[in-house]
Amino acid sequence: MMRYEGPIYRPPSEAESLLIQATVGCPHNKCTFCMVYKKGPPYRVRPVKEICEDIEEARNVYGDTVRSLFFPAGNTIAMPTEDLAAICRFSKKTFPGLRRITVYGSSQFVAKKGIAGLMNLRDAGLTRIHVGLESGDDHTLKRVKKGTTASEQIEAGRMAVAAGIELSEYVILGLGGAERSHAHALATAEAINAIEPGFSWRTLCAKPSLQAITTPTT
Image (cartoon, rainbow, N blue to C red; front, side, top):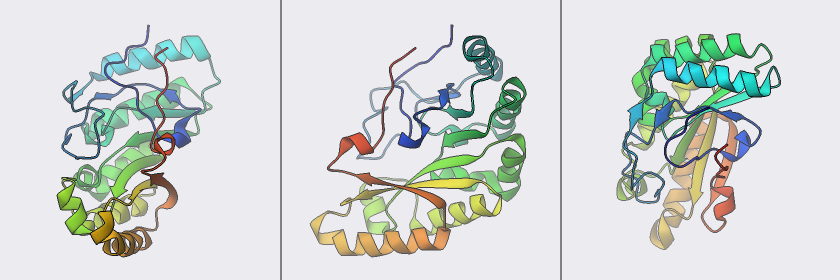
């Protein structure tokens, strides 16, 4: 039986993807707008052996039909590079028809990988990183305790693009509030234009159904 701890949370574009948990919780877990992991479980990286066992179990259930795989939970890019690369390679070997492997990853953890680490992950099969940009306005980022700056987000994004990894950047409209609305919009547009992610989703505060979709435990 495949294992999963904590809430199941995935990007809208991963609706048809197989979900195999690689990490539990979020290592930052301080953003004021996110309640997903505030009550736990605490962040930890699952053992590679366990993850591979779940991948094998998924193969027993779905056979060779899996084309897209998403590794939750909240910040899987933060796991050790070699561990993430290992489960990517194992997934490609297990599912010969696999076309896409994706993860969540905040900019500060993407940046820590460095260009060499990101290229290693790309070669192992990582296709896309879903990044919560939220805003390009430093004042807004600080207020919501995002734990990063606009310049770091741009640097991390450019690094991933240069490494050949696709980015899905998420922006929260209205995050700056009435007084920072103009600054938030302009700075966010500047950040997105500087990164040129190639794949973007807009996160609308007024429509929670577009923020993320949870799926029932199998």
